[in-house]
Amino acid sequence: MKRALVTGTTGQDGSYLVELLLAKGYEVHGLKRRSSSFNTGRIEEAVRSEGHRPDRFSMHYADLADAASVTNLVRDIEPDEVYHLGAQSHVAVSFEIPEYTADITGLGTIRLLEAIRASGVPSRFYQASSSEMFGSTPPPQNEATPFHPRSPYGCAKVFGYWSTVNYREAYDIHASNGILFNHESGRRGETFVTRKITRAVARIAAGLQSELRLGNLDAVRDWGYAPEYVEAMWLMLQQDEPDDYVIATGEAHTVREFAEVAFAQVGLNWQDYVVEDPRYMRPSEVDALIGDATKAKEKLGWEPKVHFAELVKRMIEDDTTLLEHELAGRLVRVEL
Ligand code: NAP
Ligand code: GDD
Image (cartoon, rainbow, N blue to C red):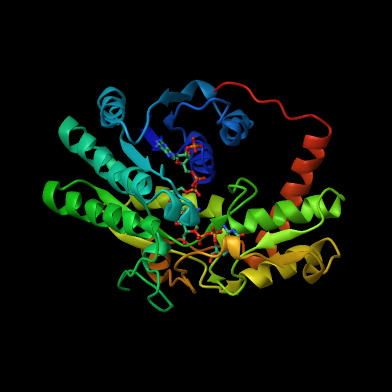
């Protein structure tokens, strides 16, 4: 039985990856940080679904700011595969807390790589790199595109990217970067733009909200479906040789288009509800991210199946169902 350690377990991608690894028969160890309230809601669903074995899943308290905590986990668990997804992942927030972002998102990667190197455990390593590293370099972006980050988050991810390449070259660690373009789902954090929109649409349709305040409507993103993107992470660690891969759909849409399609799905006109608010503009913006995932298709056999209209539809459906459950008081949080 293969053993995996996943950081960022409580996040969007972590929850889908745990689900995938359990379904593949892995023993999975997740990391959770101390919080004053339950913070494992997303993976409750993942570990309880039919056919999954919660006894092959454990959560451990640790923090990416605490080198000893992650070193101990690697030493004690001796994972075959480490998926490093933990990060301060919000671009706008990274302008407010740049040093913390550099620490967790940048140095956090070195802490984990160093834990693997120092322990001598032959773990394969996946680094959650980001299209945000391309920043202002014009699309289409692929593995050869130069980085020009536009946020403290983007700068920290560039550090994590190159640290991963360096540990591969210096210590022969099987370490790979997945350069993932934006990917979304019903489990997306509520303050990222897609989820902010779909959640608002569900609430507006139910008469609970009257407007939606957004920032830059002209930004172009390449939005894919998160469950398919975690499959690509797993595929990278199954290759004989470590490497770096862009994962994207290649399709481009603006934030405005996302809002238009989302409101149209419940029969509403986005222009009647969306208000442009400078509060959500960023000091420096990434105007357009459109990925070229040809290498992933050729070498990993990975291709996206869920495209833009279907993604928006699924997210609206998920938020509508979630709202119904919230209103009926049917959501109960438990400790994991
Ligand atoms: P997310 O939902 O924001 O999840 C981030 C995870 O990191 C959460 O589990 C969070 O824990 C954890 N974390 C934050 N600070 C930590 C700390 N100090 N110590 C330990 N854990 C900490 O992010 P996501 O969308 O799943 O993305 C997963 C990874 O892929 C991130 O590294 C992100 O930067 C990267 N990425 C995401 C995308 C995308 O479009 N989603 C694209 C490219 C790259 P809490 O739950 O306790 O907050
Ligand atoms: N969050 C947010 N909130 N973004 C808004 C809003 C708003 O109210 N209004 C407009 N936007 C614009 C942002 O300015 C940005 O151009 C775009 O919508 C997408 O913003 P986010 O959904 O916050 O995602 P992101 O592209 O900045 O970052 C995400 O994708 C990266 C990969 O490219 C995050 O998941 C990062 O962790 C990830 O690395």
